Image 1 (cartoon, rainbow, N blue to C red):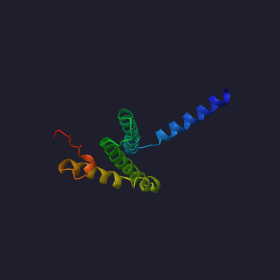
Image 2 (image 1 turned 120 degrees about the vertical axis):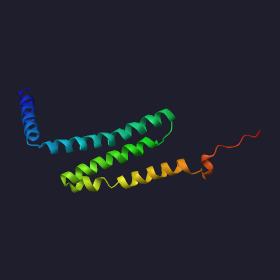
Image 3 (image 1 turned 90 degrees about the vertical axis):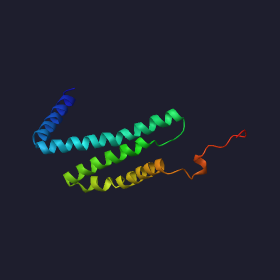
Image 4 (image 1 turned 180 degrees about the vertical axis):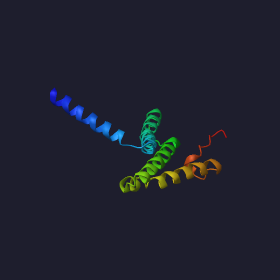
Length: 124
């Protein structure tokens, strides 16, 4: 038990030193990065809940909005931190933006996809 307590104490001291060494601007950017990561993670819950409700695999529009906003915020955080791993890891922002573009375009254009049109009933 002493082993765990001593390691927890060391960990808390490291966290306190890390937090204390941050500027106010660093803390703001940490908040932006954390919020972006929460948005990015939240998209999976949106997709999971929608799939469970539909009882089939679907990707709701909110998934792409969560992805885009979360990705942009994490990208901004990566740029602030000058972290090439985070920056390169957010390449998907372009894909999310493209999917949102298609979603918005589909709201203004009539559907040309025969699968999207409900079949006509025999009485019609």
